[in-house]
Image (cartoon, rainbow, N blue to C red; front, side, top):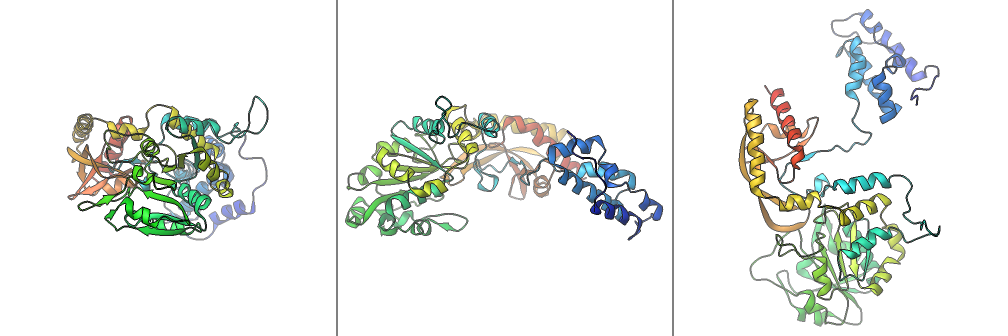
Length: 462
């Protein structure tokens, strides 16, 4: 495939060539140096740039060439360095998103995209990138339910769920439920669960936007089942229980559980937030979908990119009749997920352990051995580094207050910004005047890449 079809020089290319003979004189160079700046079409014949044009597209490659030519005109590079400079200026991908190493010690860092997909999920996304049978029954040749195998996997992982559904994120799941079940009616909710979910978005505003009315009960720290019972009336659509997954209230507190609310005669909807499917020994206070449904919840909603370790999506489990009302509402079409999300979700549910699960359960002594090995390697290269104990967190609006013993590399503070802006960005955290690179969320296979990034920064700082 030839990325550069034969044709005459464009006006832009002609102008670029002409500018080599006029304008500023490079520092320490005369007109002869400007004349030696190669033309765009000549540079583009380089095999490296021809390959890059196939991989990245001609537009990005031409842009890199013109930037290199401009640097030659400014005297920043010599004319014979234009081609090499253009190659160096090429982005690694056509996307502006950059892959980073999460050494913050926060497993589900919202600013870093929360959960990392498993290899199985990544491979599933690649397979689904082309035409798929997402809404086609290949045996009959007729239309089929969208994402039926992913939805079946979601239901199978939570045995108490009679039905399941998927939308594009956790907030969307709650909006869909409120719109389908409570538009023009009341939702009864505790004042202690009127949370802000991040970036200034507040749950009360989200729910009211659906046309529902909120009936607040109890107080910030104490709400009993009697408070809910007194508020329930003919206008009540459902009782909403929201897990305050990004903060904790301690001390003189009381919260009614789902079992107490399920006997009050109206549906109970539970937003567990973090996407835990079943009880987890390391997270005894984190609600899970299976337990809430067994206790009597009509619907449970959650996010897929938190403790589940999957792609961003909103998960719903519950009773078949209620789910039918929700999934057939017109808004469900606007909130549906694409085939790539469905593929990643199914692979997450049916495949091997996710990176999130591995990071959650890794033995701290294993992390310290890794830190000590990396520290020894880097110290031998002259880096000011030591292996230290650290404390990691779940993050992403999950398991507030839960800490995880970890291990980290301790480096001079100046490393933080340099690592973050390096060729392979490494994001750590500052603590007590040092840059800590916590290893709990860093896969072991990335240790050598992490060490190389530190060596490059330390060498550049000499």
